[in-house]
Length: 344
Image (cartoon, rainbow, N blue to C red; front, side, top):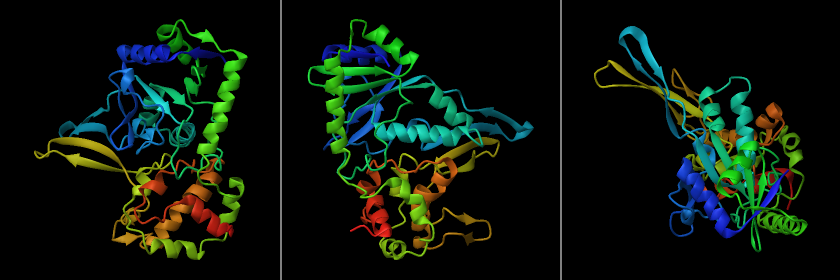
């Protein structure tokens, strides 16, 4: 894998060059140490030293609300959604990249999702080694800190600049076009990168699972009646915050919105979440997960059992967002898994 050494000036030139060439979004600060992915107007706005964004970058591939098609009632005419515009996304942390790779599998296998895949294929990703991490992060325990694919460039802060590793031919083109003077990385540069990775992994171990994460699926076999679900669900507000901030939650609802004149409308897809009270409601007033404990258990099993049984990967990357978002302080996967495992 090719690697180039960038100075601060060259990195800024790369970012500004990409902005001048098309749509670019990256991590920006929204006050009081809160960070989000948003539009970039210049390299000065980009924050690569952030800890965690409020919402993961999944919002670019599976928007919170999207129009799938518009339609006219008379004649049965319809118009599919317009193709996405090219996007460069800068500042994706490795655990979020791991989640994106998993979502790529979910949306491309079985029922191929054309909308998701079109946006994914139109997006170039510049990932970054974390300089900081959330206080709830446990990505190392979940094995999500070293994704080998999914990025076009991977940036690592080193003492005298940045190391840019090329992941795809498109990433190489970015460097050639917007950082033409970048030098090849030396052995000393690679050693500095490795040292930065050690520091990053220490920060992404703010919490530790305390046992091998590969044991989680088998651990959940027969644990459906464990008291942890009822006990924690007693304090659950069914707000769905843990679903909305999770980079691997992808459930959605589809509804038709009809215009006031009844002549046409649009088919809309929106995020949904299994902790919401009406998530499992069906016609006739039936709700297959009526109680909070049922919904709470489902979320844990989806992360630790159902998805691993389906694709062989845990559906939790240890970002810690749900830990931060849960106002009732009950959603921490580390605490839940440790309690079921019996780890003190």
